[in-house]
Length: 454
Ligand SMILES: Nc1ncnc2c1ncn2[C@@H]1O[C@H](COP(=O)(O)OP(=O)(O)OP(=O)(O)O)[C@@H](O)[C@H]1O
Image (cartoon, rainbow, N blue to C red; front, side, top):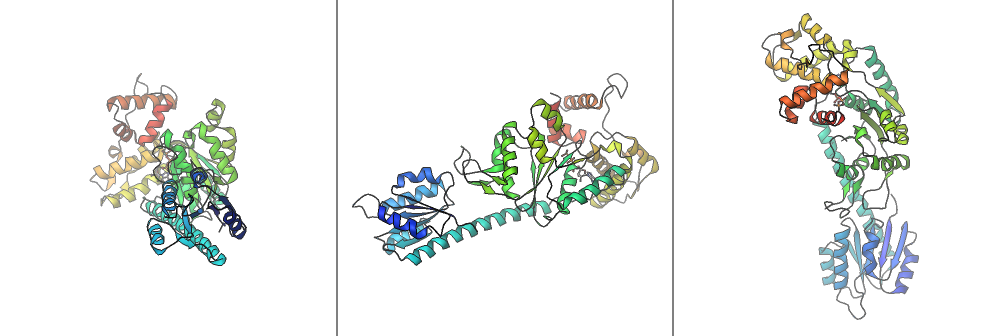
């Protein structure tokens, strides 16, 4: 445990010097100030952990009211700060009043050196335990939300996927940063979870940050956290996702969406293994394994100046590229049969088989939405069919746009763009309905609309 930083506020200069000497070995830093007016600027940035605060400052005033006033100011600015009150005129009534208002403890002057040291050390220890409990609670809720998610196994039959799984197992146990690329729905998140599951951190949490779903203004706070009052909506201290992932894995999905101005801050956090929340100047140590994913071409983004080259080198120590589903036909059949079992079970249907003709229809389709689209196709077929065998008529694919009568009249990207604008038109720009029809998530649709300027 670190020793903590103590701030002493007392208008008697000889008391300040005596305390500075007495307490210097007990704390990492001891700062003594004679006027409480300096308090706000000193504590606001999170630089101190606890305050030893005199109760009376103006000469001749000894009601303790000033101490109580400054106690509430400290609580307003730094709710996590521990305050021990110090007074020569201490009486039980004032002590009780201060404790009721949230002071951590109370010491009477003239003080007993050992008693004062023990009180301050205990208060600091208690503060650290409170922080640990908070951290544990956050982990517990993150673990609970992980456990409530539907778990899917990775089905792999194609040589490309078997090679990827082999690589995943080999790099999982190292702490190397991994970048996973591939089109939407190819299984990037699943691979990230597999890396975590086989890592030394498997018992700890994996914190998933969907960078495609965070609004521009909240990025910094979401990743790095903030101190209360550091911006208009910051009503409470908040721990960022990077700090939350400490001990475990941080999965930054859609890393290409990280705004350029925040890229140096992420890079510095990765290099220094610390994060500094907004409104604080106190770096917090973090210990994470980083896995990033994107469907964007980060090299092109580097060339365009929208992604920093040094950050790219930092995050892609190991690069895993997942091929689109149409290039791994062996997986189509295996994954279709896997989801068939899952959905027959879920919807309590008797169907148990896909006919040969059905399988070849699935195998010859292009799967623009990759595994996610295949999953939805099987789910729909299971829901709608009353037979024990699924045949070609049970599989409905997205309508292909026939602009010139020829299905393949452009690059895949051009066709994708046409398909999206057509579906958007048809759905009167209802994003949820359009995403559903395209078999992609709303966020993916949004990203693609941005990409194609739709
Ligand atoms: N090899 C696989 N075996 C079984 N299920 C898979 C496989 N690959 C992907 N899936 C399933 O397909 C769906 C999409 O996968 P996932 O979310 O990992 O893709 P993604 O590439 O991260 O997508 P996006 O780019 O849209 O975020 C999930 O339900 C996942 O469980």
